Image 1 (cartoon, rainbow, N blue to C red):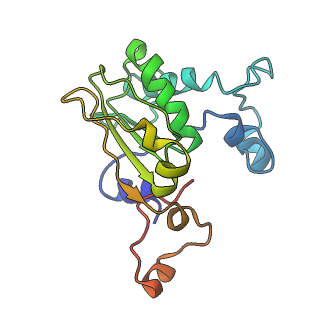
Image 2 (tube, rainbow, N blue to C red; image 1 turned 90 degrees about the horizontal axis):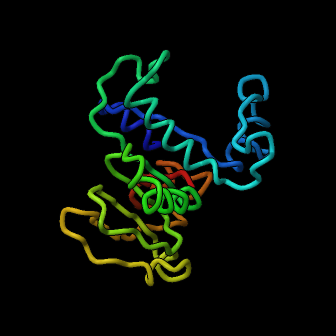
Length: 192
């Protein structure tokens, strides 16, 4: 089961943010190619004047602001907002580490960060925001997370490293039936 379904079932709201070109504008799986009628006007490159993912930082900030202080349309339909946690996996995790280190001290719109499948980037430890990291053995050994490990900074930015299997959690055809046949636990987060 996808994590967002489980979270909603337990009473949490889930808001997905697509802030990078690969998820919005790059064929064949970007939103604009997948459903041009619905998403054709989305643009995270300012009309191709910004060919990188630099605008993702502003998109992250504006999305959180729209949730916390809606103007016009309320994305949560009036539900109360207690905490906003930014979550990112793999490449998006790298973008959120940069956001945490450079933009969050200025914007301060997130209450925490949930970072999955790291890319070996270190976090600032002088910020009063919680951080939870989940890495696989592959991330630790091959992608630089071993060198990026940091001790907990009490009350500031605790970083927790756990171990998971990238192979199990990223398989496109993985199902709970496969898990029960192999007697393996289901993935907590199966999106890569």
